[in-house]
Length: 289
Image (cartoon, rainbow, N blue to C red; front, side, top):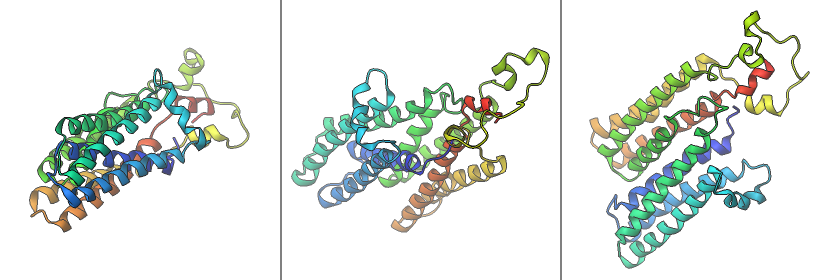
């Protein structure tokens, strides 16, 4: 699929923002006053900024409000409701902590749970799509949640916890790539799609269209294997290995923390781009892709 910048920004930034909010709800780091204000401001900037980026992907952004009405059947609608609930609950928690030095622990736990629920619903938007086998795997929700928790732990200044979570994320991403490579288009081929496999190899005599169209641009985007491998190495090296090494092998300072966060952010962007670019929609078979 064609990697839309708005969706990449949304899934990357909002995940980090909700991850940091979840840790703040759990009392990590144990900050109060204006220091807490800085942490919450960063978390909200990432979470809300990511959500606003997702609106830019809509064909008609003014209809975004309608997404909230389909919560019985739509993961997108559930995501919107969970996000608003999480932001509102954490706003009350933040106000009490920053301006009144009161830590509403139960409210913080509820807010943290809602933040993780929001990320889970985001992952299910993609996981439910049987037409995109690389997304329709059990590994997709854990990858999204570990992105959220690992990045959130980095931003929350929890080096050892961040190292553990990022290591788990790296292992899960490698597993997902391996399973996705072997799964392909869920066994679908030109032969199975046409039912003519029993008589031999099937190929297109003529393409369905004489030129490019929306489906080809959006649903049949292809990335070369050698480029995919380079991006996977970049994702693991910058998004996982470097931050883990900085958190465990050298003294943690503000400088090393900033380097680790920036490296992780670049790695996450590369991984998210691959998440969309490598997704093969089964309808691409119709066009001989």
